[in-house]
View 1: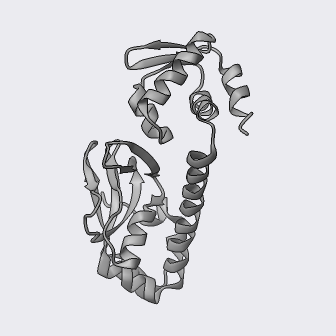
View 2: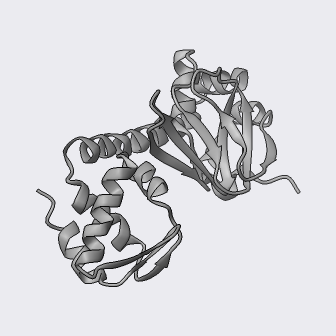
View 3: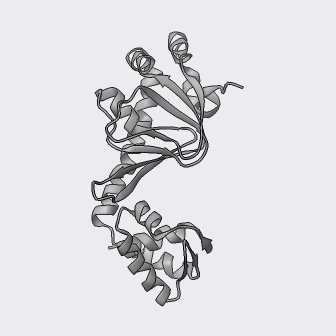
Length: 218
């Protein structure tokens, strides 16, 4: 059954009549988990609004290092897609469906028409853009200035006590650092009795100590 956009994106309920007709060009799509939605350097032809699921947007360096820039989840749009459509540029990162995704896909021509003619749509687009840009600036600050021990402790503490299925490489991607750095720090946490390490998984044993370290970022 087609999704009513206002159910997930209530701000669009106020679209002007002509804008609503333009927005009717959006179609609902179902995307399997693991699908690569866009790649670094590929052109952008659609504006995507996620209804359900999660899209991971990441940057991969020439040496293979990866960093997760952000995730696009239910009720959100992709700031990189917005940037590409407005600037007429290609993607500068890649987007992968982490889970099955249901989304609304609006053709670029309809997007640009709405942006030019609808105050409601412009407000919706730029509000989401500004919010995501704030998140990206925070990520840059954390990567550039944050201590890796405190950042790793915060990442673990946010996931709570108990077992966590994640490889050292996956954690490194989340934190924007090298696998070797994560492995070295996790071994130190294990020595202190804060975590227990296993193959492809780890168990948080002292969330209090991790939270304390996370709060002492200098």
